[in-house]
Length: 182
Image 1: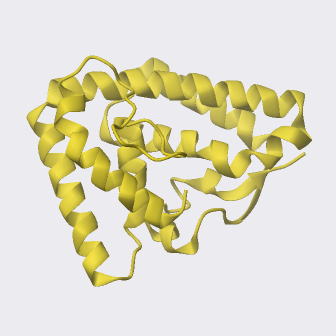
Image 2: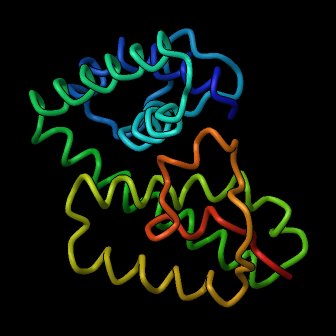
């Protein structure tokens, strides 16, 4: 997604966040969502807000900070629900990411072309694991998935828009600094 799409998504997601946090599902379509928007989850909102941190426009940075503050306020208010949804999402995203890594092993050329978009899953896994305790078992699964990726990973430049890079330090988000090789 481009940064304007991230901003539009984050605006809509924050407006719907309290309703989402008090409902049962960890994934929700946003009412009035646009084509190409992800479902509303803790991870998709955290990722959109993180990507927006590098905006240079003062007005948009102030709006991003307001959206982050409101997100944090609501997640804190509904902390038990937020943690439950985050853990459910983390497990599902880890399953999806691991499936992609298996595809990469089976069809390196075809799957490597999708890396820039599919690595969003891994970025959300990191954001969720940072904000909400992944636990021992999920932590081990994340490490095992990273070992699979490292076998085919080629270090290089940041793969998303350069403005996003400061929010994703390479020591933590190493998988965003390169590509899946053949």
